[in-house]
Amino acid sequence: MRIRPFILVAGTLGAVGASAQSSLTVFGVIDAGISRYTTKSETYGAAALPGSRTAGQRQTVLSPSGLSSSRLGFRGTEDLGGGLAASFWLEAPLSNDTGGGIANFGRRSTLSLSGPFGEVRLGRDYTASFWNDAVFDPMTVNGVGTNLIAVVNSNIAASRALATGGLLNGGLSAGTDSYLRTSNAISYFLPPNLGGFYGQVQYAFPENIKVEGPGAPAGTGQRGRYAGARAGWTGGPVDVAMAYGESTVADTALNKERIKSFNVGASYDFGAAKLFGELSRVKDVREGPLFARISDRYDGALLGLTVPVGPGLIRVSYAKVKFDNGLPVPNGDARTNKLAVGYVHNLSKRTALYASVARIRIRDGHNNPTVMGVTPLVVSLPAIFPQASYTNTGGFQPRGAMGYDVGIRHAF
Image 1 (cartoon, rainbow, N blue to C red):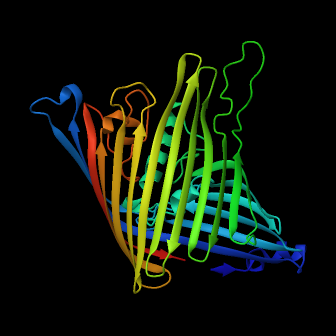
Image 2: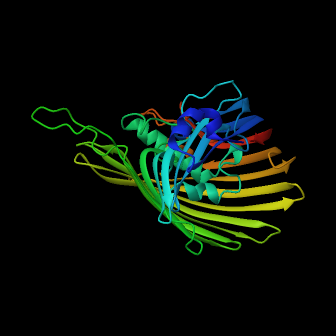
Image 3: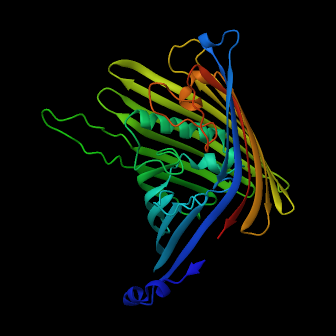
């Protein structure tokens, strides 16, 4: 929907002059579906004796993000002449399942200047290292089929941020700072006329106060800092890109911790089907004067497929993540894999019905409670599915999960 600004603020724009061409667009998505999640766990270790127990959880909800995240946004552009343009983008999450209104513009809040040189964008936005997890995921990182690599990465960032001092960069909104989004960022994007090459670099300020002087309290240093970049090429049916990001989640005299993420993804559109693939490596590096350097590693891989069928689209995704424990713990690693299948039936260009189902298998989940459950010594945000969590306590470890979404989405 396009609304001319002079209708909204005619007096203000009239004073500016008639030479500038401006526009304002109101857009959004309303998604509503029935979702069900189930988890299974069993006792392990000393508790895994004859008569060991199994446990499970079930949850049924009305979800606002089975196919696309519900949102409301406003974006506008002003032509400054000479190829220059100024633009803004404000996008807020919506909780249409509960009637929740706009609480913030946590999905995106940016002001940009663009031209032949590219685009300089200021404000809260997706991180450069997240894009490949979304672009090369047939399930578009929504609903029960969300890319397993994205689920694990989000849990790592959330649990480590909370464990080392609370929320980063203004908090968590539809994901994890600074994995999915980051605040206080400066981003530069290459212009679109480079023969298919594209890319961006991004830096987010930690905005911490530096305290100096005798007896000054310990500070947080570079905590909240993010730096990343992405580069790719697209031409015809091919799209390939790689990205790197580094987020500082702790920076004190006793503990320095950074999450380093590298991924490469690609897709090829055959017409009758489109193939997707991604490889990812994430390192959680901790070091300090009181302990040796520890580097946990998470290696992920994804293969996916979409097949257009009349007005609909079949979506299939298989992903796995392997955890390598940075501590010298015998048999301390863990593995998980996820298979997701879905179908989207387009009733029009804006409205679609959808159904998705996903199944997760976990091996030795107790060895990596940061991702698979609750770490006993810290506060964490566990999630097997992004929308539902399982508490790993009392000698239980999660072993598997299933979930489904059935719903309708309308975009405007």
